Image (tube, rainbow, N blue to C red; front, side, top):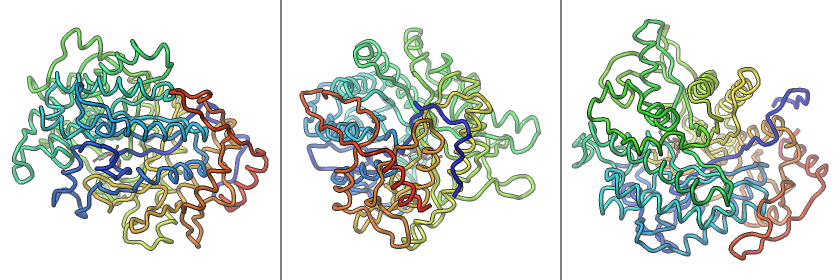
Length: 549
Ligand code: PNW
């Protein structure tokens, strides 16, 4: 592992870093606490929809084990935790006239309070793909613009009202491209609609993804309008959207392949980013889709333009782009990882769509900053080690390809900030835990923490240590952060899990150095006083036990 280089310029002390998760991927307990069904409940239970035939009924059981997840976050010394709210836990039937579940509200209130007690900033996604099933049944969800915009804005308002006194970082939507294309085009994600009749008896891939995407943009924009007009002055938070998008490189320097790379970016990113940051769909999309691309009214455009306080960036890989093919979701380009000379772009992940090419991460940061001129929050980035699911625990914990991936992107991050002048303000690694990886079931593992699904025990991988250590070393004033003690989960050969006992001890000792912003807590709740431990003692313990130096 690299040694500390204290002379190196650092990221600013306000830089937020941590790990990310999403409700359906970790919570389980789908029929507990009054939760209504989401579109992923039955979809993931349908034979053939997930790679291993497994569903989200238990996932990492974080509805019950969330305190242990927080212990992990504390032991990793994070500043922030990105998680998502399950809409159907909060409003079981989803709609604007449907009742709110106080049990659902309480679950997230407890989580938010517990994060703040530990000095960890909650970074909250309102929608990470788990649409209430009732809204799909009622009016086909994202395909019905007027209904879904009204229901989504209502749901967002409930969240701002109930959590916004303590949550100051909001993401409206996670990855509209995935919602639209994978859910309504390719049909591989819920609700699974597609023109491919082998896959779905309903759907039209030539129109529905563009309609769904349009509704997602408008729902986001009207929720932001509500936040800015009704809550921001009082609550003082930030709100934005997060978009997936991988760097696109021309396959070679032929003019058509150079153009192809831009077309790929126009559809992967510009589809959503151009209206939101620049005020309209990319011209290439209009050219490609003609009147299949919905249009905004003048009034809508005013709401959409400038509707995000930052650029939320989820990115995983880089694609080499060749002109041609019929795939509109890739801008009629073909993607490959094989260079003209036959070499691979980088190490292959477990999933076919991901290779490790850190140069692309830095390029993408530059591209986005130059095109959209917004501060960038990296809200997801990570790697799934090939065949990790079939390794022994000890092998899986030594996740060198994932460490290598994070080594590359963190270097790209600091170079983009310090050498290129890109304004990056946050970084969240995906994911805190191995979890339900959608259509891949539990086969593909993205966690920095290994989850044994038979016991639900959590085991930190080497990558957790790498990421934590890197940010300790590279964020100003963060040197003292991890409250890691002898109790810290060990990723050593003994491969000790985080157990309930271990967890509660860590929790008792685990107050962080950072000031809670939760002084005096809202809703009449009292927040326990933080206990303080000598920073020097903490650093010493951290370095010696956690990093094994
Ligand atoms: C993101 N692709 O999804 C999601 O936000 C996470 O929930 C997910 O677990 C993570 O990335 C890892 O997959 C993606 O096909 C799903 O390019 C698919 C793609 C990209 C991102």
